[in-house]
View 1: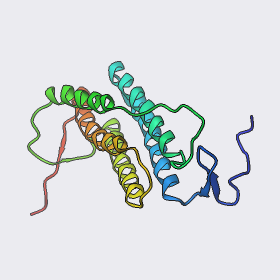
View 2: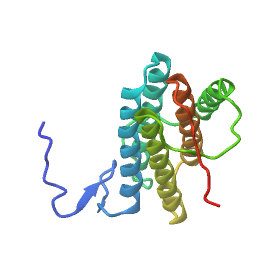
View 3: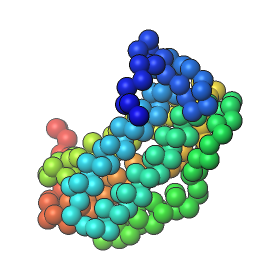
View 4: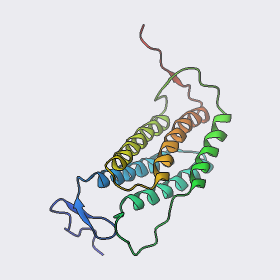
Length: 184
């Protein structure tokens, strides 16, 4: 199988189901942002030293692939494929991970600036990419395009997870949090 098909050379692409749309379509933008988020999660995982956290990252990457597949489908056509779905327990899983890590952290009394270690900074960048992906999926919904409701909820919770993960990894690495001290 060749990687290049040349079918997108004119600026169009096909959704799962065969519908052709421009590559500039908000649906393509949405699942492109999910793809970028998934790639950043791979980078985050490469920085993690804790095997349990690496396993969580792999689980999240799987769910992001599920979300990307969902967004890549034409909602008005039957795909003829069985695609995995997102479940409420995927959100519960993130919440349990957030609570578990948060229990090991000091109470946050200040705003925190991203930084202090390349791993922490990369997690914060990933959090920002996650927020952008969430905004693009919300935009898709606001343009009356079908989006599985759990997708937005999952992305919202995932950005919370990433914030807590950045703090947790920083603590594991012995990195002091960079407190924002606003100019007076």
